[in-house]
Amino acid sequence: MALTRRQLIKQIGALTALAGTGGLSSVAQAARERLIPWKNWSGAQTCLPAARLAPTTEDELSSVLKATRDMNVRAVGSSHSFSPLIPTDGKLISLSNFSGLLSHDPKTLQAEFGAGTPMSQMGEPLLKVGQALLNMADIDYQTLAGAISTSTHGTGPKFGSYSSNVVGLRMVKANGDIVDLDKNRQPELFNAARVSLGSLGIITRVKLQNRKAFRLNQKQWVQNTDELIEDIPRLVKDNDHFEFSPILHSDVSLAQAQNETTDTKTMPLPTGGDGDKVSKLSMANTFLRNHPDAHASLLNFLVKHIDFPEVQDISFKVFANVRDQRFNEMEYEVPAAAGPECVREILKLVREKNLNSFFPLEYRYVKADDIPLSMFSGRDSCAISVHQSYDMAYQPFFSEIEPIFWKYEGRPHWGKLHTLNAAQLSKLYPRWKEFQDIRRSVDPTGKFLNGHLRSIFGVPY
Amino acid sequence: MYSTPIRKALLAIALTMTLAACGGGTSAPAPAAAPATPAAAATPATIKLYGQTCHNCHSIPGTGAPQAGDTKAWSGRLYRGREALLNNSINGYRSMPPMGGCTQCSEEDFVALIEYMSGSQLK
Image (tube, rainbow over all chains, first blue to last red; front, side):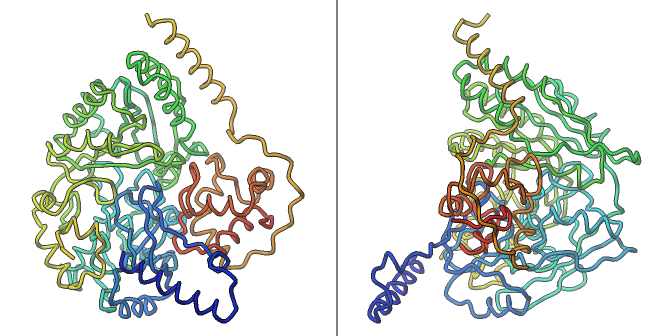
C-alpha cells in the first residue's frame, strides 16, 4: 500500500503544480481520468496496479524487468484465475502482444505459440497446419501462459494437463535475461517453469507437443448420481474423455463422454452459453431452497427434460463451452482412486446441511506428470470442482467443502480458490523444496511474488 | 404429497421456466433513443484489441452479449450513455467480465471498442 500512497502524493504534487500555473480550477476537474482497477473474470479479485503495461517485444519486456527494483511485477493473461495470483500494486504486464502461432513442425507435430495466445484462438491456426491440442479444458478463455502456469487441464485418465505437453519455453527472468528452455537447455528450470504460477519469470513463447487434427463426438445424458458413481470404472475405461456434473440438491447428474471419431458428419455445438440452464437452477434454488424435498423433486424432473443434443465436429469446437454465467470456483485434485468416495461425501454434506449453492459440481480425471509444482505431480488424479455464482458469497459454501478435500489429501488447483499456505502445501508436494530452491535462484529478491504467492510459498516480506 | 403452498411454488417455477425457455432474450425493451451518430472508422489497434478479447463473446450468438455490428441490440444499451457503458466495461456487468478481459485497455480503448462494436458514437 506504500506505493499507492506514494503515487497519491505524487499526483497531488502534480495537481498542485498545475493549479499554481492556472491550468486547473479544481482537483475534481483535474481528476476526470478515472483510475482503472484490475479485476479477475469473476470480479472477486481486484487490485490497483501502479502501472499496466503491454510490451510489444521481448527486449522491451526485458528492459521493464531490469528497470523494476522497488515493486513487484505480475504477468496477466485473460484474468480467468479465481485465486489471487495477479493482484499487485506494482506493475501488471499483459502478454496480449505475444500472441499467435509462431512456428510448427509437421514431422514432430510440435508448434510454438506466443504465450499470450488465448486458448480459444489456437484451434483454427493449428487445424490449418494439420495439428490439434491433445486435450482441452471445458473453458478456453485462458491464455496459453496462464493455462500452463496453473496446470490447467481437461478430462481423461490418459491425458495430462496442458503443462505436461509443453516441450519448450522462452522466458524473461527477473534480471532481464531472455532464456530458451527445454529438456536439453537448463532442463531443471524448464521442468519447473512448466507450472510456476508466474514466479520464475515471464513466459513469452510456449512450444507444445500436439497431434494430428481429429474429430470428436460428444454425448451427454442425465442419470441417477449414485448409479453413475457406481459405473465410473466402466465409463472411464470405455471413453477417451469422461466427466460428470452432479446437480446439487438433486439425485441426478449430467454425464458427458467424448470420443475420437472418423465420422465426417458434423453436428455442431449449439450456439450460445449455458446461461439459460444455470438460470433454471438458480430460480429453483431461490424459490425452493427452504423445501429440500420439493427442491430435489423439481430438479430431478427439470434436468431430465433439458435437451442435450449430440455434438460432433473438429476437436476444438467440441471441447470448449461458452460459460456466460460468471462464478467463483474451488477445485482440488484428489488421488484418482479416492474420487468416488470424495464426491459422495461432498454431495451428502450439501444435502444434509442444505448448503446454499446451485451450480453443478464437476468431476474429471487427469493423468500424472513429473512437474514439481503440478497438482498432478507423481499421481493420477480426480479433479473435483465446486462453484458459486459470482453474485453470491463463496466463502460460506467453500469453507464447508474444503475440509473434505483435505481428508483425501487433495491438492488445490493453483488457479482456483483455496485457503492453504506453505506449511500445508509443502506436505502435499514431494518435490516442494526442489521448486522453492529453483525459484530462489532465479528470483532472489522476490520480484514476481505478490502477497498470495508469498503466503503459499512461505516467503516473508 | 407436498403442501398447497409448495405445490403452488412448484407450479409457478415450472411455468416461469417454461416461459423463460420460450422467451429467448431477457433484455427489457429500450426506450426510444435519439438517432445515433455513426462512429468514426476503427483504428487497426482497436480492431486488434477487439480480436484479442471482445471477440470471444461479442461474436458468438446466444451468449447474451450484443453482437458486434448488431445495431438493434446495441441501441438497447447505447441510450444508457457513455459513463454507464464504461462502468459496465470496467467493472463487469452480469455475464460481461470486468474489463472484458482486456487488462491493458485504457478508458479511450474501451470507448473505441464499444463504438467499433456498436457502430455508433458514444454520448
